[in-house]
Image 1 (tube, rainbow, N blue to C red):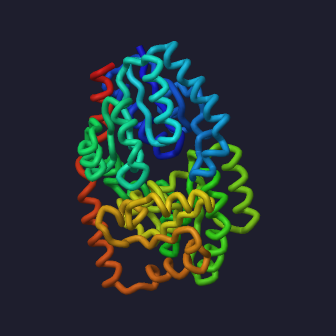
Image 2 (cartoon, helix red, strand yellow):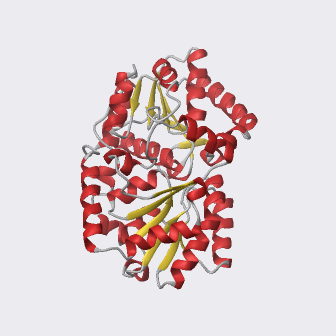
Amino acid sequence: MSIFLSSGEASGDHYTASVARELRKLGYEGDIWGMGGKEPREAGVRVEWPGEELQLMGIAEVLTSIPSLYRQLNDMADRVMEEGPESVVIADSPDFNIPLIRKLRSRGYKGRVYYISPPSVWAWRSGRVKKIAAAVDECFPLFRFEHEFLLKNGCRSYWIGHPMTEEFADRDALARSLPEDLRVDERLVAFLPGSRGVEIKNLLPMMEKAASELKEKGWRPVFSIAPGLNEKRRIEMKEHLERNNLELYTGPGRDLLAASRCSVAASGTVAVEAMMLDCYMVALYRVSPLSAFVVRHLVRTKYYTIPNILLGDELFPELMQEEATPENIVRETMKWLEGGEDLKAGICRKLELAREMLGETGVCESWAKRIMGAA
C-alpha cells in the first residue's frame, strides 16, 4: 500500500508536503514516496529522486536538460509500475509531470492520478487540456477561474479554495519568526530572486544594483534565499551576497514579506503570498530570448501575476524582460514607498477583494481526504 508523489519545484514541494502531513493525520499508514525537495523530506515523504534537479524555467532552459530529464522520467515510470501505488499525485512542473503520467497510462497504470496546481492552460498551451483530461482522474486547481476553465474543457476538477487562505491567517505570527532587529525595522524591503537556478541567474544582478541604490536612499534591502533551493546554489548565493555587502535571510520568504514595507520578487507564487500579506510587490520576469519569444506569441492574458489577473487591474507593477532593469525596479519601488495614503489605501482595498476570491480554508485536508478515499 503506497501513494506516489511527484514535485519538482518549491511551490509543488509545499503542496505535496502539506498533503503528506494531512494523510498521516487522517490515519494513512502506507508508504508515501516519490520525487521532491526539502519540504517533502521533512514531512516524512520517502524521496527517491531529488526534486531540486527540476528547478528549471523557460522553454530554452528545459530543452537543454531533455536527455537527463528523459532518463529520470523513465526510471520513475519503471519504479511506479513495479511498486504499483494506489494513487499518483503530481504537483506543478507540467513539462515533466504530464509526460510522466502519460507514460504511466500508456504502460497500463490503473490507479488514480491527481494533479495539484495543474498548468496555466487558460493562459497558454491550451492543447495540454486534452492530455490532462485523458490521464488525470481529478485536478486540484488553486483558483476558481482555473477550476471553471478545466471543467468547461472536459477535465475533472475539484476546488474549494487556495491553501494560503489558511496558511496566512496570522500575519503577525509569520513576522515573529524573524530576528527582532528585522521584525521592528520599518525600512525593510524584501528581495526574493526565486527558487530556480536560471531565475536567480537572470534576476539577481539587477536586484543587487537596485538594492544598493535603495540602501543609499535610507532603506534596508534584505535578500531571501529560498529554503527549497538546492544546497550548492544556496551556498553560492549566500557567499555572493555577503561578498557584495548585502543582507540576507535564509528562513521562509513569507516571514520576510510579513514584516516588509514592500517587496521586489520573481513573478510566481510569491505574488500570491505578498497579496495575502498586504505587502506591495514589484514583479520581475526575465527568461531567455527564445522563451520570451514563445511567451509573447502564445500567452493570452494581459497580466502575468495572479493578483493582477484576479482583478483585471495592475495592482503590482510587472517588469517583464527588457523592462526589468535596476532603474525601473527602484522607480516602481519608490512610487510605493513615497506614495500618498490615498494611493496605498486604494490598492489595499483591491488586494482585500482579490483575497476574497481565494475561497475556503481546509484545502489540503480536503485534497488528502479525496486521495485517501481512493487509496
